[in-house]
Image (cartoon, rainbow, N blue to C red; front, side, top):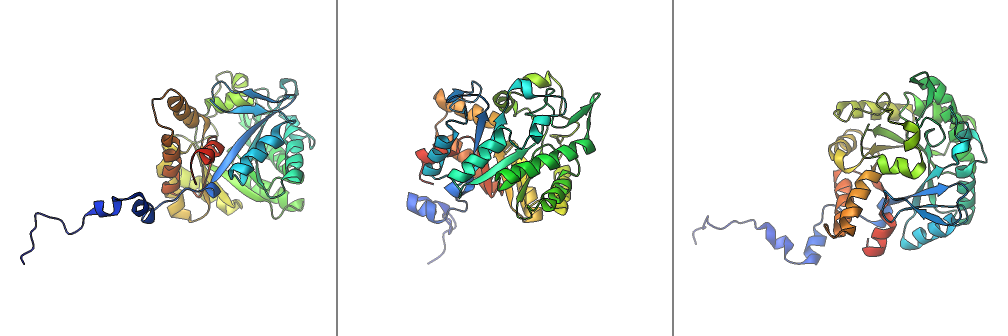
Length: 331
């Protein structure tokens, strides 16, 4: 019988004839083990309070945070990231409250680790929640003093590790911070504490709701973080940043924001072949969740956005939607 070239030998639709077949040949899978739920913990707060710019997300007081974490664990979450919202009267020029071993976030970590010893706690290392100018470092005149900032970050990291943080996550983007923090952790007997570096953190406009959440937006008063966060136009620079952080001792690297930088995630994963995380930041989350709430987009769009991050090369994803997705979908 003569072959009729009007019909293809390979029909890709054969593999799409049922959901079971689609799942069987799926190249990328998103599971509960890939998701990290961030939490905002507010000093002096009783109960919870909504964050206007982040629908369905709240700040929680120390009195209720354990129950919220327990709910996350029940949903299937095994890793959380914690961020402090401290009293404004404790903020100063150098962010000195970050160096208080009994501060809000250290107390919260210590308590949570005792109650839930198996949960992985990721602690942010940066000064912006603690400074009265909203910057991530020590401000000298109109400039951030990189090397003076390192001294404070190293001390902050050791206190967070002392409190029980499993993973230290420097997000400040100071030069040399990973090596300095690694040396301080090792010096104070935290050799096994993991460093998750915000290695490619861009000077993005997607961070606004987060700054509302932690109360640093008003402190910035329109000032720019462009002298230390990355230029959004650059990709080779991201590879340079990651290479330096790996050399200095980073165990995991992260790209932030997530979905607008899928190309960066892919380049980093393909180049370095090491654990690579992505952060679906507050602006990404709020855009999608608002559209879902308005009925403009289906709720599956949030799941799709995270699957895209995984497909690009992310091994794990920080997302404010993590717990709700596990309640909605079988992951």
